[in-house]
Image (cartoon, rainbow, N blue to C red; front, side, top):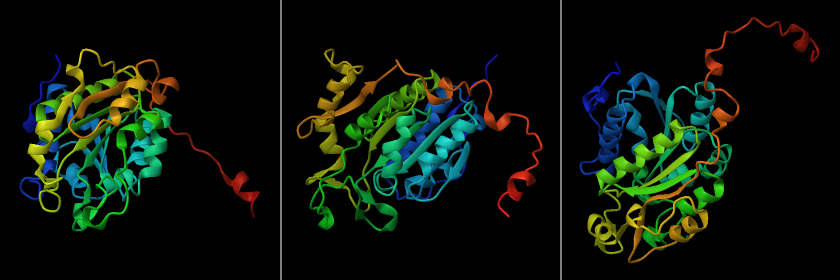
Length: 290
């Protein structure tokens, strides 16, 4: 008989985020997803970078790895190669993922490693008092750049699951994250979820409107459109650039024709980290370089 879990099984420390922060929603949704999918806490690992949201592994009772700024993805990749039997989730803010970690965001998906990456996208570096992040609109706090576009970059980088949700719709977020984990569990590879949220302290207003009001009026659920085909990458690219009065959320793209790296190289049934270690005499090699 399989063990049944509740969200209380994943409770740990009380978060210290600002009251009203979207990170609370992400944390609570993750607990619901893990419980509903019956994921044992000791078989889940959350890898994070640096930032307000990257403190999430401290507040949930699963394995956690709090890394350095921008490096959550490659460490999650290494972990998944070593222990492909574990559910590995990488999480980081927009600066962490699309700024200092942009090189990893462009390359880790190409491997199609079976991890889920959740981007906490609020347009600011909240931990360091609100500087504009790569996804901030041009003009925000002196920002001179056009905003980074996570969805088309994820598509072009080779992610086989690309989705977007937001903290104002927890039920939708639960659905999307659950589908991302299923995609990985079924052996199809890298899953990316862009989570739009707001920083209640430094970025609570979107183009002059309250965050919740702005997105509530514009959210457009792709899965409710009978003409939308998430297996069509051309359609996904087109929808990725839709903006203004319509804000698409949901699964933009899902490719089930490819195998995850750990499946392709047959690592799942023989995790490298669990293989017996043999003693090796490296003196012969070292002597060559004396």
